[in-house]
Length: 321
Image 1 (cartoon, rainbow, N blue to C red):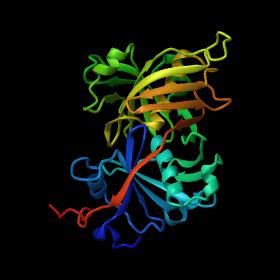
Image 2 (cartoon, helix red, strand yellow; image 1 turned 90 degrees about the vertical axis):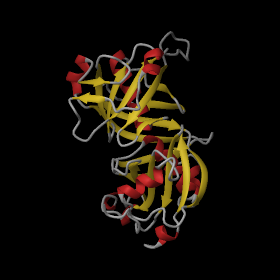
Image 3 (spheres, rainbow, N blue to C red; image 1 turned 120 degrees about the horizontal axis):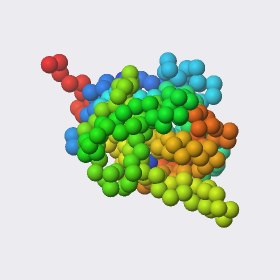
Image 4 (cartoon, helix red, strand yellow; image 1 turned 45 degrees about the vertical axis):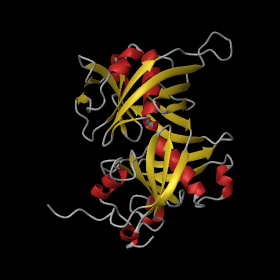
């Protein structure tokens, strides 16, 4: 991709993971650095292509933030939120990114045959594999309760005011490479009543903002018949920083499952189904994880729906005010 490509029209692919959607652009040599204004225009659902974010595929060695990862990951996921702000990574986006790399021929064919491979993100290396049914599993790496044992004992470390829900609600903060604040609700009717057109107000205010998940615990399921729950089940809505409400959030689904696991004290309940407006993902807590920290995997679909090229002029920088 040359420096002049955006003015002539930029090739792109549109994809989604449980309807969390993205504009994907191949820029192997890192020659195109989109401004926040250009990203916002591309992601605009009326004046642009439309998406919850932009994902640029760049060789790790071509980016300062990817150079240290280049020995283990040829490709780096440069992710921008819909408002143009830079984000650490995205759990749904990383699966769509893997599908994009495979479709574009940037990965060897065997990478789509159930073998693990690594990509670089601003949250570090992420390993992925394609399942036989076409879904992708991402090793999301380490997670932790931001407030540690104290937050676990108290059951919360923040208060969140959500339009439509009356009084502020207690919440639990988690770090999955990006920040999350999870609020438990009593019933689906409360989840439906929440107004996420407006950003929830979090206190204390996180220094870099936060994604806010509203979660309703549903029934746990005994799969093996030993009268012990094997699979947890939760329903979630999310407001993503820099975007607004989205149909799904991968790291948010992990946060919702992990927070519910912490509240329930169910350290042995390691598989969770998370229902989101855009579908369903499966969260698997890594072996040896405590209620405070550990590792986590995320499994879900990744769908490429269209490809094309932008019209000349769409990516022009706005004139100074």
